[in-house]
Length: 374
Image (cartoon, rainbow, N blue to C red; front, top):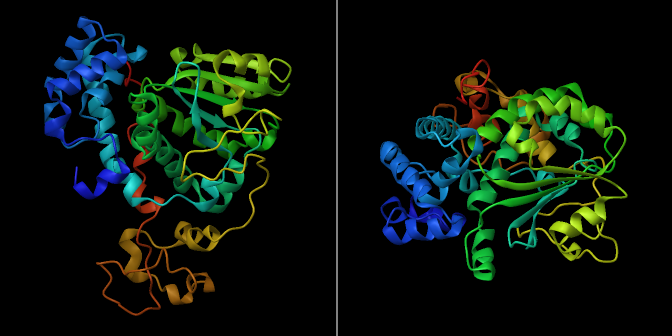
């Protein structure tokens, strides 16, 4: 990993350091691995030694595949899953996404975030106010690829983000698992719009296969009456072992359930009135009250990319005939494509976007693949 990436990846060590005996021992102690699982971890390392370029090739990363329930302790399945994951990550350029991708401003304001606090066992807590959020507006304004890239950027932030530095200082160990609190108060038909359901179908497979053994508990709180109908739509997309981690509470039962797992003071005030003082980790700015998203600069900076040229049509497209929205958006149009021979300032080309990062790779391998888990 180049040295310039280290500030964004505080726990990511160079490959020749990751597998030193002291690192393996620290991983074993963190996860309290028995000798059998430690042996599987070392065997998995041997089998995927050719993938040394990947962020995943380290004891603290591969151990999640060893412990993942859907691998059933089978070393062949573990290797297969790791190789599929690395191939997918390479296509999506996720190993450097925290350095190269700037999330939408409105995405950072969406009512979900890692919290500056831990549960009763010292594990991280993420709060997702799904019922108050407005994902349909994000989809309509910025498109499928931008929405998905933001979701995967959030996953990478949990695995390797700068927040881990302070966590390690306070807890004396690396992060292990996460307790997810999903607040469904306000759930309505906008949240199960057909367009969102289609994205959920495409997203859930890579989310569960390529980010293994991350959730410790999933607390579905403030569930309204409509939840039964919505859950019937989503249940087929959720793997059995993840469903076993879920606990459901109505609005009347929510406080009791939350107190079982954490101090209410770490939660946002809107979820624990008079008690909650929780704040998001630095870099995220969630509007916990949610609601319909208001306009932002992103509407000008990112929206044209959804209808602009693909990589192979850049030279044929005349941006000077486009809307005036390109004139005040220097952040996304700061340089010209290396393949464009026209250097006129009337032909700006997007430098980096979810469309160019993903290039459709998020669907590859999942459309007709039913043999990922054996």
